[in-house]
Length: 68
Image (cartoon, rainbow, N blue to C red; front, side):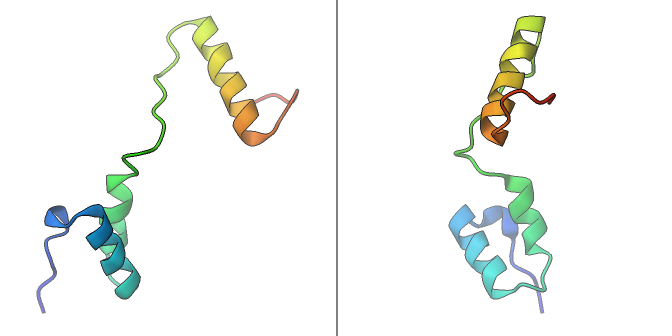
C-alpha cells in the first residue's frame, strides 16, 4: 500500500487523515506544519524585549510574580 503525499494535502485533509489513521506517521507531517494562525513572537534583541517577553509569558502562564 502506498502512502499519500502529505505535502500536497491541505491542513484539513491531513488532519482528517491523521484522525482516521492514528497508527500512521502522518501525525509527524501535521506537527511539522504547525498552526498558520498562531501568534508569532520575534526573538528578544534587547533587555527591554526580554522583559516584554517575560511579561507575555507570565500572562499566558498565569504567574504574577514568580520567575519565568
